[in-house]
Length: 169
Image (cartoon, rainbow, N blue to C red; front, side, top):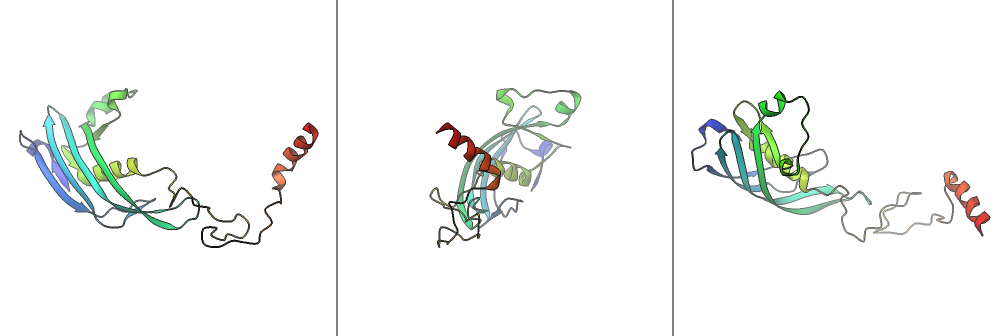
């Protein structure tokens, strides 16, 4: 949904919607529910609200899909992109980390949701903290089965380190 900033009333507007989002690293298991209050202060746009839903991710250890519940508070300030374009180099200060930019008097709520969802996703998604992953030899899912691979074999790239350990002893 695109919102024309100059048409936002003085008291702001409340927006509630359900949106399916597909990202490179995740997709929504069900539509995300967002409740946003959008108001302006001068040229700044203040977006406050809540984003809730379920996201389907791939576990980084076992590569199985799993669903993660998302519930995130949104508090972002958007400024016109002309502010940053005028400056050749701009170093972000701590209080500017929750700042975004809008173009041409339009704020795209889909972009706001994608941005906030990406910030809430884990860098290394895990289906559970106890996930055993997959066997590097045969590729078996160690959560559901065991394999007969010889785990005592040392990677040939690490043989040199084994020799150093022997010298130390």
